[in-house]
Amino acid sequence: RKEVEQDPGPFNVPEGATVAFNCTYSNSASQSFFWYRQDCRKEPKLLMSVYSSGNEDGRFTAQLNRASQYISLLIRDSKLSDSATYLCVVTYNTDKLIFGTGTRLQVFP
Amino acid sequence: DTEVTQTPKHLVMGMTNKKSLKCEQHMGHRAMYWYKQKAKKPPELMFVYSYEKLSINESVPSRFSPECPNSSLLNLHLHALQPEDSALYLCASSPTGLAGTPEQYFGPGTRLTVT
Image (cartoon, rainbow over all chains, first blue to last red; front, side, top):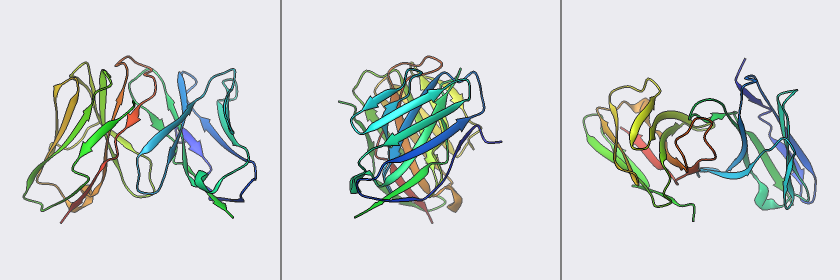
């Protein structure tokens, strides 16, 4: 079983739609959780950290459920510019980021 | 400013060449990382430097040799590479070198082609 699992997609959604991505992790000792976004042929960029209390940044909301070892990202009012691959990332007691394989989102007009 | 810079942007090298990739950050971050990323795959960690000391080597072949001259700079020396080493090489930094590290910030990468 992979340490961090994501649905690879692609998710094809129209502009204005709400879309949700899920991610599960296998190590219950995981400490920190992030969503990164990666555009084609570019570097990953930190989108947001994920906290147990949930956090929101504009149209983006991230949730963490430690009991179920599950992380989610909700994007409201999708824009064309949201098209990218979204990487779920987990760390535990090391300096390593453990990446999921990414979920590809394509927003169409 | 969360900028990590990398040079060169693109590099084509033969299997007998020696070249170096460079990474720089001026955010006062204490941990720096090298990753390799193949198409449609997530980044794979290669090396971690924490407070200028090599703390993690993910069993990377010796044809890749990292160097951390100071807290702002990270190099990756390349020698006798194979075509399968062609990939995007990403540098990242994070504020501390502690376990359970906070977020990492990535540079734009060097796209390497080995011929």
